[in-house]
Image: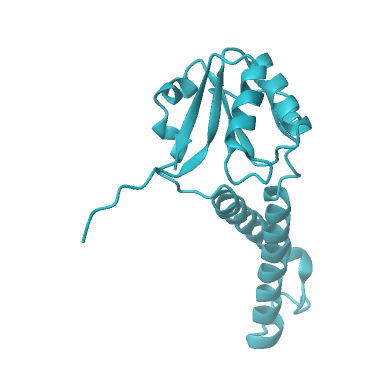
Length: 182
């Protein structure tokens, strides 16, 4: 059986920029051109980049809220079950359902579940842990953690055409353009 060489799959095309302002403008123009599957890589957070990219509303805050609400209900219910149904004790003449005494544990349960929701939700929504990403194949990308800014249009974008994307990225005046192999 003969060994057949196949061309490497294309993940996308990446442009390198020197300043955050150039990257924000490039992200705005990329979104305006109709591209939806693109990402920006920066060495530090840039105010306004999320809006320029048109990123949808974050899901983590809702996950934290729902997990916190679940934790509060679960821990309050556990105390009610224990104190009223399973093992009722008359302590100092108080009611079995003495809810003010349940508040501290209910609050701590809410905080605990919300923290787990934040951690697990952030990992799940970001697709982490991801020890490998195709953009690491581009040699210039090593500077993404120090002083360069990158925008990558992914090949799975519905409007992706290798030549048109390359020409579009050229119009953004980047320092360099690289093909990213999957």
